Amino acid sequence: MSRVKGFISFEGIEGSGKSTQVKLIAGYLRSKGHNVIETVEPGGTKIGGKIRGLLLEPENHMDPLTELLLYYASRAQHVREVIYPAILKSTVVITDRFTDSTIAYQGYARGLDISLIHALDEIVVPDLRPSLTFLLDLDVEDGLRRNRQAQKEDRFELETIEFHGRVRSGFLQIAKDEPERVKVIDASKSPEEVSAEIIKVLEASWH
Ligand code: TMP
Image (cartoon, protein in one colour):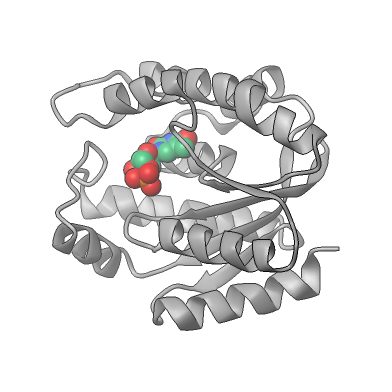
């Protein structure tokens, strides 16, 4: 699995501020003269948007394997329609979530076999891995509180605090396993402070 320069992902629990930071960092890179696209998983394409609806609507009770395959269906379309073509044109791609979310949510939190997720990943996204991943780390209760204030209530926000605790520790485990790629950022600070920290790390590690 090769890491692709110009492919950056943001990861984190609910309410960690990923979408705000994706916008700020994309703006920063554009100001430095890069062509940048911002995208999101699940979603990023018209079909992905429909799959996102299926995955997040609270009334959809779903088998964990169905859930996993829907995330990969969305990802298959996303990489072929958006990410590969952008990378071929040397456009920087910044995605709000990618494979690490599947490992953390469906693997560590839902309990699916992580080797199954890796096997699926090899089939769906061969040779595509971010060169840099920002893990926005935050206390689970703080994150859920932020989302409730924003009136965000999808199928995952309704999961237990223990589920979200497993997601957080799953992400931290991924960062421990791959410290060169995955940079842990304290997301409890203001958006401006978080963004300044990300830019510092980006400048130091994105060659
Ligand atoms: P978002 O609300 O951050 O856009 O993400 C949508 C939800 O989907 C979020 O609760 C995390 C979850 N998710 C997974 O469970 N597995 C995945 O592979 C991805 C990309 C997201």
